[in-house]
Amino acid sequence: MSDAEVRDDHADEERYRELAASARALVAGEHDRIANAANLSALVYHGLPGLNWVGFYFYDGTELVVGPFQGRPACVRIGLDRGVCGAAARTGRTQRVADVHAVPDHIACDPLSRSELVVPLIHEDTLIGVFDLDSPDLDRFGPVDQRGLEEIASIYLTSIAEGRD
Image (cartoon, rainbow, N blue to C red):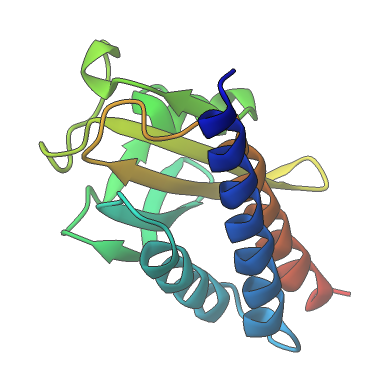
């Protein structure tokens, strides 16, 4: 890894620390899943470069249904057997895809999207939904992005779980 890549990772890690602090402040004391998803979508969409869609899909017991988001209009329903969002929900593992056009069952809600990162939202072994990010850039998301966005997803899950206690 070159010095420039190390510096870029350091800057990205700092950006995610700042985003996480802002996310915690945004959801502090609020437990509504829609309100928190809306604010976190806006925070991430405007806080990170190179994105064209950021949002939440919620699991309704059968499929994923679009929730709050920032970006162009989205697919409303996604089966767990299709696409990158379905794979994240089905496997319970973050999906980081460098080129969505290489994924045979990719769902092209926005034809400009080239890469995608989807974090499953699971609380106490129950699928809540997914946190989905798209980019018009190939290979936009790396390991630092994945860790940072998984932390944002965790902050979201903690905020809505606190309202259930």
